[in-house]
Amino acid sequence: MTTIPTFALGDGTSIPAIGFGTYPLRGREGTDATLSAIDAGYRLLDTAVNYRNEDAVGAAVRETDVPREELVIATKLPGRDHGFEETITSFRGSLDSLGLDTIDLYLIHWPNPSVGKYVDSWKAMVQLQKEGLVRTIGVSNFTTDFLTRLADETGVLPAVNQVELHPYFPQEELLAFHRQHGVQTEAWSPLGKAQAPFAEEPVAAAAAAHGVSPAQVVLRWHHERGVLPIPKSASPERQRTNLDIFDFALTEAEVQAITALGKPDGRLFDGDPNTHEEM
Ligand code: NAP
Image: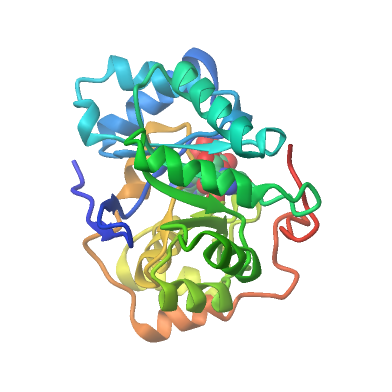
């Protein structure tokens, strides 16, 4: 089984350097896929209220022999629950759905700027962390402007920002901001989902040079950039190979050639957090 390195977080805790994405796995199938991911070695499990699978992930946490304290369970606040009290209530709902007493990583799923309540939600998350109910608080799909507003209004920057990030959308500027301010980047759709760049020359060439698969090259590219990818796979075999990225390294030139695949319109869908909102 692969041993996973960790990244140190700004709040003094640490987090596995790769996690398991669970959308759209649901029901018994979702629990079984999560159990096989845990068997493969994943310890960070990424769920959300809006994936409607907190119950399936929670069942896997109860069924596995791996102790609860070795698992890092991440879930996300949906847009319809923004606001201070709404966040506290939604958090309790997540604990119920997961069947857990605490959550290890709690994220605001989308900023939803037209709703205008993400700062109130953030204040509630700071309180939940102070009460010991959440270990690490963070956000998802936040731009540098939204992050700066949280810091200005609460004095607390998120420890984690989970964003769209893959070779066609490498997020150079956001990564630089995160590095400067000690925010850990998590990559969603880290493989590029249906538009994976596996046939692109820099990816294929690195795969051939290192004797690994294109998916492993892309996941290693994230690691070389200090990014935490959360690939989803329902296949136990792909779950295992996606984890097996810690005994080879890409050269600086290979990393740069893959980053150069980025395009200004490289998002998978029009998921610009300034305009795309999810409730
Ligand atoms: P992804 O992980 O980049 O891609 C998943 C797709 O790639 C699945 O179709 C999977 O199919 C396939 N795949 C996995 N490993 C593979 C391999 N080694 N070779 C070839 N194909 C492979 O994209 P994602 O599922 O969109 O993103 C991952 C996670 O990020 C989600 O599950 C979710 O937890 C999170 N997410 C968060 C947000 C947000 O707003 N915060 C948005 C989107 C996603 P199989 O299952 O058949 O292997």
